[in-house]
Image 1 (cartoon, one colour):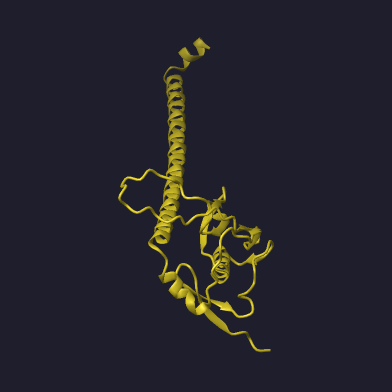
Image 2 (cartoon, rainbow, N blue to C red):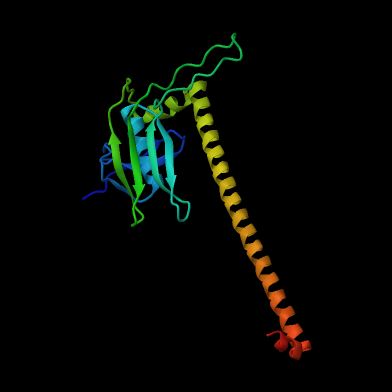
Length: 213
């Protein structure tokens, strides 16, 4: 039996990956397994492009033990609603609304085996989908509006800020532990000094010491 031909597919990050013909039409489902988080992203990104929406990497959770990502939510880029902020320049044209509260998503979780499994899949979108053929995906990426690119930049900036806050919190906890260790060490040193002083007093005048006893 001949192996199915593989074709390069352009994802929403502009990178190429290989999708095997015959499996590229597969739809996500609860229980589907992936070898890694990146494999799950590649799969859902290809599915999104084929169906007609843009994937956005959204929320994640980390392990309390080693800080590694163990849970990830991948959503439609029209998920949620844009926060309304006061306009600083009334003459500036307002940005187009790109978020419509879409609920479509998949949630993947890392198992003890090391594999990632789909634990939730929401298929329905609340907006029109625009499927793009493989040979037209590059032009779709190039035609993204400045608003969509601006949204992506803000998302990456927000994730970077979250990482910085997390690093600062870890550093603060580490400093606290080091201070406690230093205080404990100083306390032990004082106790040892007291014991050494007492021993010296006993050695220098043992008779007086035993009379006090």
